[in-house]
Structure formats: structure tokens, C-alpha cells
Figure 1 (cartoon, rainbow, N blue to C red):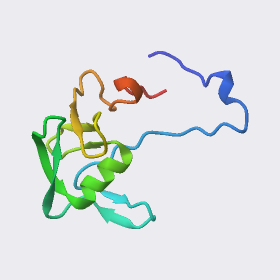
Figure 2: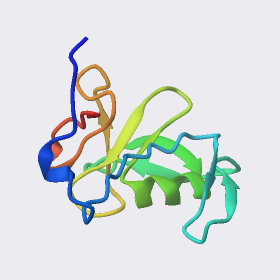
Figure 3: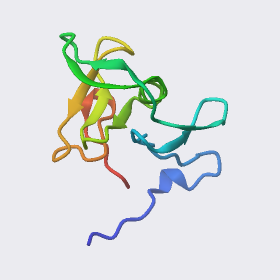
Length: 112
């Protein structure tokens, strides 16, 4: 196990540490107003790739949350990220290469 420490650039009090949140289809979550919601319901929204091909159908609450966070985990275990082309384009993520999703420039997110 590799021992890690927080880089010195984070020792200043003005820096806030953040984390990545991956919403999961079917789980409890919160909307943008802090209201508790469940990411389930009637599957009326299609997650589509850049070619318009359907990846999955999900509930509106799930779709909205995946758009807001930029990533999400389907009940099937498939992870999706927003793709290039706006907030209505998604892409499947290879979880062997990027188990925590993709960040900027399609780089795999790595927990510190």
C-alpha cells in the first residue's frame, strides 16, 4: 500500500478539499434544493450517446442527477459520464480503466 500525504499547496486555510459524488440509480440522494429524493421511478428518459444510440432508459430524477453530477452508475453496473456534445450526450465508461469515472480531458479520476 502506497502511503500518501496531502500536498503542501493544500495546507493553506483558503483551500477547500472536495470530493466526487457518483449518483447511483435506485439510491436515495438530494436534489439541488437539498430535498431528499430517490433516483427511481418510471423510466421515461433515454441516456443517449453521441450518435443518438440509447445507452439506457432511466427515471427523470436519475437523468437530472446524472446531468448535474456529470456521471452516474446504473443498476446494471454500467457507469456513464457526460460526453462531448452538451448535457444530453452521455458515454459509457470503462470501469476497468476508470473505476471512479472521468474528469477533464477524459482522464480517469483518481482518489487521493
